Structures are given as C-alpha cells and as structure tokens.
Image 1: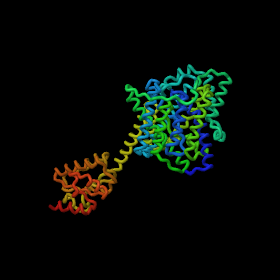
Image 2: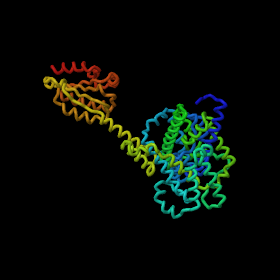
Image 3: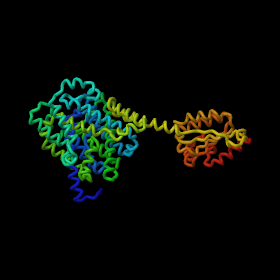
Image 4: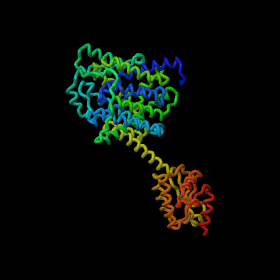
Length: 524
C-alpha cells in the first residue's frame, strides 16, 4: 500500500468508498432506529464521524460510523436522560473530548494490553444484546429498552405478534445470511434485503411498523445541554462511550493493519475519532467508532487512502440530501433482521470454537465479562474482566515466586554452627509474594547473618522494598545482620531511593563479596 496519490489509487478509493457507503446506509438507518434517536441520527453520525475521522484519523483506510456497541451505550444514555436528545448529546461531547485527551497523552497503544478473553466476552455480549433487542421489532411489536426486559417480556411479545412483520423479517434474515458471497461482493446483502423487502412490503400493502419520515436536507444545529441533576450519569456514560469507542476503533485499526500490511497511528486515530464524535454532538448524530466490516469492505474494494473514507461519507450525504424520503417506508422488521445479522457476526467464534480446550481461567473471564455485558453494564463488564485477568496473573506470579533457605555449605557441619544462612529468592519479588518471605524469615530468627540472594529476581516493586525494610529492621532488633545480593540494575534502583533503612553498604552485586562480609561478622 502506498501513500502517494495516483490515478490508480483514486479509482480504488472511489470504488472502495462507494461500496462502503452502500454497506453503511442500511446499518446507519438501523442503528439510528435502534438507539431511539431515529433513523436520521444514524445517518448524521455516519456522515459527520465518517468524514472527520477519515480526514484527521490515524488509519488511512478506516471507515467510521455508528457501530453496535456504541449504539447500545447511546440507547442507555437516551433512556437515562428521559429521552432528552440535547442532554444525551452532552455525553457524546464529553466522550469526544476524552478521546482527544487520550490521544494527546498518547494512551492509544494501551489497547494492545487488554486481555483477549475480556474483548471476546465483551464483543459476544454486545452481539447478544443486539439480537435480544431486535426480537420485538422483528415480530412487529415495540422495541424493548434492555436485554433483560426483552427476555422477560418475550411471552407478551409473542402474544402481540404481527405475522406480516415476521414474514418480512424472516425473508430479510434469509437474504442476509444466505446470499452467495459472489453476489454480496457486488451488491451487499443488507442493501439487497433493504430494497427488495421494502418494495415487497409496499407492493403487498402490509400493515407493519416503518421508519417514518426522515428530515430532508442538512441537520439542524443542536447545543448539548448539561443537566446538573444528571451530571454524574452523563459523565460516567460519556467516559463509557469514550473508552468503548476508543477500543472499538483501535481494534478495527489493528484489523486494517493486518489486511493492508501497514501500521496505523493510534494516538492520531483517537484524536480523529474524538473530533468526529464531538461534531456529532452538535448535529444530533449517533456517536460511533471505526467499523470493522465497513473498513474491510473498503479495503477489499480497493480503498487505499483517506479519500475512500471521505467518499463513503459524501455518498451518504448525497443520499440524505436527495433520497431521504425513499427511506420512509422501510419496515422496522427489515432493519431488525439486518441488525440480527450484525449481532451474529459480532460474536467471537474464534474463542467459542476453543471452548473445550481453552484454559479454564481465560474462559471464566470471558464468561463473567459476557454475563455482565448483557445483564449489568458495559463498563463494569470491561473493568471486572481486566481486574479478574490481573488477579489471575498475580496469582500465577505468586506461584512462580519461591524462597529457599539453606546454610552456607550443606556439606560442612561448621556452616550450621557458624549460623550464616542464605535466603534465595527466585522469581518476581512484589506485593503478592511478600507473605511467603515473611513466613520463611520466621524460621531463621536463631541465626547470626542472613544473605538475601536476589540474583534471580527480575524486578522488585515498592511494596516489596518497604516490606523488606521492615524485615531487616525486625532482624536487626534480634541482632541478626543482613546483606542483599542483587543485579546491578536493581541495586542502582535501591540506591537511588536514598532509603536509610536500606543503606548502600548492605547492597552487593557480587555474591562472594557479601559472603566475605558475612564471615567477618560470624567470626566476631
């Protein structure tokens, strides 16, 4: 892939952008409706974010717009503020601002450190949420506001079933799931379903819920309203949007890198996404992120530079200005079928296929994140998953750390009489392993000199340093001299602390030098 402009790249960019725009149209409408803000909000978000992120972002081929996870969060924001769009947009504004700050302080690369089971559980949970929330629209009834409510009200949904809507939704599912790839590459299956089933519904005169009127022309300016009563909720949900949008976008950037063989600029990408979402808040657009499927479609269709993303947004703008009335009669069941396909595609089949052989610890993290995502809260789910993963890593590190006490020379009886002991520490020396060390020290309070052999310690954290100081003071009160042998790097770190309880004279790099000092004390 090249950065230089040429007729060849322009042709690919135009075709890639147009193809991505065609794919984005039904999804933008569907996400807008699913969010509760209306189909127009989905289009506004796709146009504004798609244009701004393409120009200012850090991934040349990325297509940005409303996504499933961001739609789910925004829908919860709209519910939390009582349907007040201006107040909901204040959370979107905060999210964009936070993303810009994250990019400026260069935290973009941190997404690589989120454990895979956390991402897997989260994405699969989002997929299930989308599917559950679309059951009611698929059956021609009013949409539900939460997955739990969708499950609990399923009997009443079945009782109010609109058979005409179900037929349309079923046909949509058949098209989006079973259209041959050779056809879908030319005309995306969601677009086929959108046009064909809408025309069928109109031709047969079906009485089903439809999108309704979409404002023709440019969106009106909206000033985000900050409500003091809901300030905490707005801030928390804004942070949630920012974190989710950043993770979603940067993961898509990694996918784009793997397909194109290039490297994106994560911090610039965060700034571009933040600017785009901030602009969405002023036009009533649905917030979004980098969209994996649309990005891959763009690349496969020839997109190589930012022009492809601009082309994608321009196509949607043209459609908004001239073709918005054509979307008025699109059945909600058709959009529900399209979104169910999106939800199914989001599920992480890579880990699900390994469910019988993958480590139980990783599967437990994935299961917890999945459950919390679906039934509790998205940000709590990610936080709990990261916390669990950290706890498991710490547990493994504690198990790897071991301590061994032995006399100076096991073959010499006078070594025991001389009462010089070596306390060998292997593995990470940190807060998690300190309790083991305290237990070991309790067994050698009858000795005269202890040498802490830390040559096999890769790192020491501050908790371990302070605990070591306390042990040394305790041994000193029992008239036991201590010496510490460690790597030059670790010794320099301890010396740099200028801690009086760890004087430089007891810190050694060479074990023989420490042993010589110990023998001098033993002979006194």
